[in-house]
Length: 440
Image 1 (tube, rainbow, N blue to C red):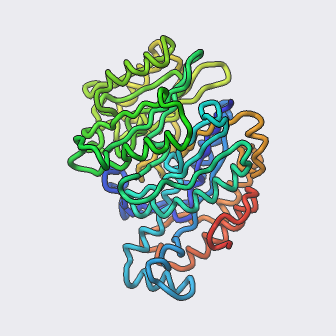
Image 2: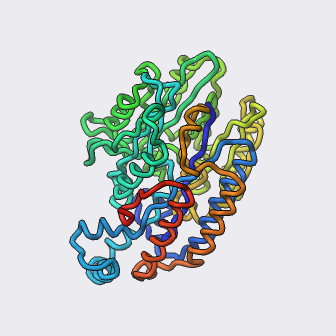
Image 3: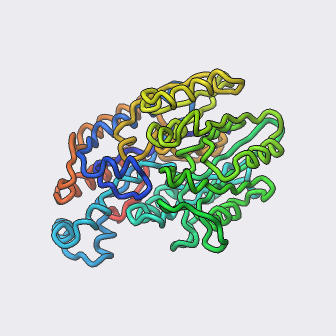
């Protein structure tokens, strides 16, 4: 298998509306102007960098925003322009919610199990229902359509529908999922959760816990994983209350390596002992204590929301946001990781500030999908990164995206028309077919 990082193209309505309680960056930057063109080009540069390291890279498209289908479901009628004008006049907060470009964080798009781990030998993908936040819950149907268009061959792929909605099965996707593997041992899937809909467990007091235990259990069953190779750790309530709304804010793993903050999981020593038993002596972990790396600095700088990548020479590298370099505690921790006896030999700092300002680092921007050569060949959509695709997408971004977007700009019906024109062109460039509701 080869791992491909499916990065989300940042959409034309990238804006800072402060919609996510518990996401401190989102709340801090709410109401500030954003720069959609710069954001999308930053994302493309990250894809270029990862590809040039020799790592598999691909792309997922943005979603139509504002979501006119959602606004119509909520009772706004008329032409597209009339729907937006009426929503802006009568329920401006709903227009802001339906204009979020949060689908760019494709770590939340789905949970994926590679064919090597599933009972039927197919890649299993389940779009996240994201029911905890309304502005994210409206992503699920389009994500399902996009994944079905890309992973269309039923011989190789099983794209499930999102889990049933409501609080019981709240699913946040791969941001709470980590796959670990060592030579000679079966892979282990960590499916973390923050609350239980049925069991009485201690939860956070300040911010909401988003993923449920029941959702993580359902994903394990759907993906036909060996129950002995599934671990269901609880996110630490204090970590969530500090702003770690997803596991990938305080932990990241790759193959035989896991780095985490002491407040990532409840009883992390017991978790690490379990992983050592299942993965053997080749498993490596690095834990940051709160003294070494205060959790407020971890949430601010996102050193754990980094990509840990396996390179062609057998070593690993960390792709971290430049905020981690600029925060002394975070930088010192990452330097310790490189210095110790583990596979990570380098840290690279990239500028993804436009995403970071809304609470998404390098890891948030990608969905990891491992594919065999046959599975890769079965995908006919033009979504795999190449220098030619990079130039095509960069030209497309410069042609269609606004330089600056202010909060009041989402009231402009022209923005929706610009977005639909851009996305209609993009589906042809990526050979996706008609995956958007406005194309039906």
